[in-house]
Length: 436
Image 1 (cartoon, rainbow, N blue to C red):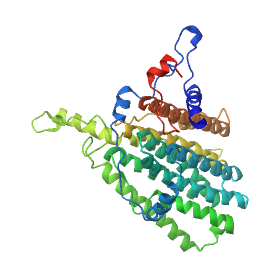
Image 2 (cartoon, rainbow, N blue to C red; image 1 turned 180 degrees about the vertical axis):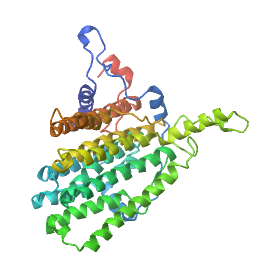
Image 3 (cartoon, helix red, strand yellow; image 1 turned 135 degrees about the horizontal axis):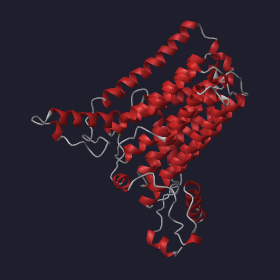
Image 4 (cartoon, rainbow, N blue to C red; image 1 turned 60 degrees about the vertical axis):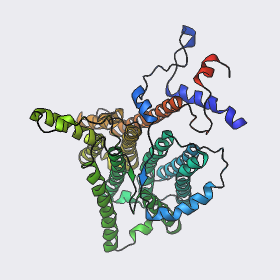
């Protein structure tokens, strides 16, 4: 009984944090947010028609599915799927940031228990992440919010896990490799959702995100048992072979992603970008200029997510190569977290565009962080780049948290559901009449 009674209170607290409310003493309705809504009425309407679509399963996932299916049967039926997702996400955030705090330059050696907590915590996160969908189907509580909550938290978790894994391997001793691998990971993850945005279906390959998470768990366990210096004891040929294997697998996945992105027809075959582009302009007999405009419109809708990911990556590369204060070399983890969370924000916007069948915008407020940082460098450094980096990191983090909370609140309100409960909200009429 208690768990249901606190849910409306938690919702109101979330709304106050996200929106702020007009003062009721001035004769205004306190339920109406001051800020403009993130999602339009058209987007929310199309959200109702969204169906989760996924194809394929990775090799490791086939094995773990047995464990996840067994574990989910032990859960009470009142446990909400998003509650599992949030629990795993919190575990991941706490353990990852703990290691990053102990190794802020990815060169330090953390206590053994920190590495082990990451290994155990990330395995729990992986299990909970695999169980949430099964719990949703088991309880009949599958919603588009669940997909957003799952994949959106994964976008943030990918940044934290990749940086913490680098800390466990002391990759700060090889800054070029550290920079390359973190941004490669973020780009590959983003392109997976870019492909989903275009095709409407998430494609799981033979080797996919589950294997990457499993690799990170193994890295943490070995660093705990053998020490992080263990990773520098391998002969150079072995290191090169491992490097090219990882890069090769990433390029293979990117090739598959872009094969779909560049060939899928917008609006057809379940493609998520909406509304579909009108085809008459491309028919034979129409003026050449009109056909070109139609083609450009199609291309822009398919490739619009490209600028959102290329901007932070290009800015990071410029700062990495030109910073006179060696910003990345002195503060690699903070640098990577700032840019990584900016990418996670546009990744969440891409997921929202997919489930609402709407066009992905090229510009986003998360670009302010990287933009201010490079502007500070170009202006001759009136303020320490380290201070600017901290300020940009705080801005990007707050921007990401606010966006996620706002979107979840608007979706919950539209679908008349709670985020962390499988019960439905009371009707809008009852809320307005004050009967509860």
